[in-house]
Amino acid sequence: MRRLESKIELTGRLFEEELVGEADIKNPEYQKALKIAQEQEAKILKKEGYLRFRKALELAKKFQPGDPTNPRRPFGRELRIALQDLLNLKTEEEMDRVKFYTAIGTPLDKIHGVDAFMEYEDLDKKIYRATFDFTTNPQKKVYKSDIMVLEKELPDSQLDSAGFLEKIEEYAKRTLSKMAVREVQEKKIILE
Image (cartoon, rainbow, N blue to C red; front, top):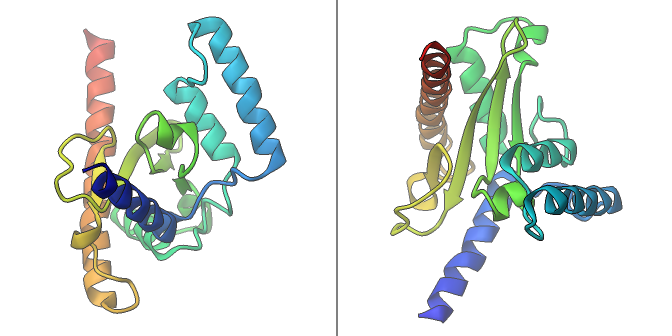
């Protein structure tokens, strides 16, 4: 059974990297920032190697392999465009408020189960976020992210462009919905 689990894990990692790429974790500056963050967190939490969600998120954002407003991989690029369309953003300035980030290889991925995330910043500088977990395991029932992307449900962007874009549209709607639900939950907490 272990062999099967590790094969799924390896294949899953390849699927994640192919879909959204890896954060810039080989960068010496990343390694330095990670070590400092872990040391700071260990002093507070008395737990070695752990980073709280917010700290892990900041680290992932800081070490992107490219521009989050112009993702190189089709999944992030097309999802960003679809969300911009749903939000009815027209100008370059408006569209640049939608960003797609990979977290592959970072503590956000390894500790918090977030492989990627998308953010939208409104005119009041409020950030709305939805998180993604990519998996090849059809039996996976528990995931920590807002949206699970199952490999077998996502058509190949080169072999079935229309099917891929249709599925991206579905993910964009779910992304917007998750962002809206989180906003309602936050307002409810404030009101109570």
